[in-house]
Length: 364
Image 1 (spheres, rainbow, N blue to C red):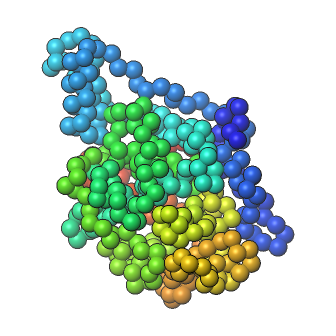
Image 2 (cartoon, rainbow, N blue to C red; image 1 turned 90 degrees about the horizontal axis):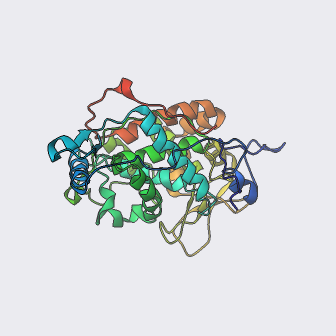
């Protein structure tokens, strides 16, 4: 259903009905979100590399050893001079962002019409393993490339996101997987109509010995005590837990992955504050089915909430933040951008400072 022009623009929001402020697009309009009028140029090819086989070999070795700052082989000089350090600029990272955004347009046959939600889930899950007490886990390492971490139950289905990004990695070989995955999460948020999320490079890829143990990510079947145990371990507070939960405005659950089924909102490829509005405005009943316990909206019976979602309106500390974000999307966007930025940086030994964070330009 992709248009011949393959053009791209910012995510459009559907017009609210007179009786509701929720966005309820049709299935067709939801998929057409990623096919709009304004055209933008994108990086269409990988950086060109020249030189002998030996020069390319040394360049490849240097890239593997030095991680984030790429190394490229240039010219026909001896092996010592053939390898020259390549320090990526903001423009280089913008090219990566643009390539991800373009691929989001080109590959529009996934779920509700976008890989955006699963890219955000990949970035979230590779970052959410951080343990502040031991300093282990987090996005530094991209250890989900390896079993057993790739096989953890919470990561079921994320091979789709990792495979989606492989052509981008091939196009920009100087970029680490760790930086690519988190940058893809930023691109997904921004291209689905969310806030600008500051981001900075500096993550290295690590080997299988750095894989984290299973159980560090949230279990959706649990309640508020579990949520606090998971997020406090990373260093977050109650407000930040609720803000991060707003990512559930996007995507859907799959029975062959988590066991749960369905979307949280009517616009699963557009980031809004509808998740919070629906939590408060809808009547949620336990769904009668053969799957795990989840909740179903009484009205359309097409939406779902997980036990961890319902915990946000049952807990006296969480609920005020749900109410705030339901009333004020701007406040949600501001807090969401800040907490996602923090999440993606947990455990990363940056050499750069916070002032070096980049705000990459979204498609317009």
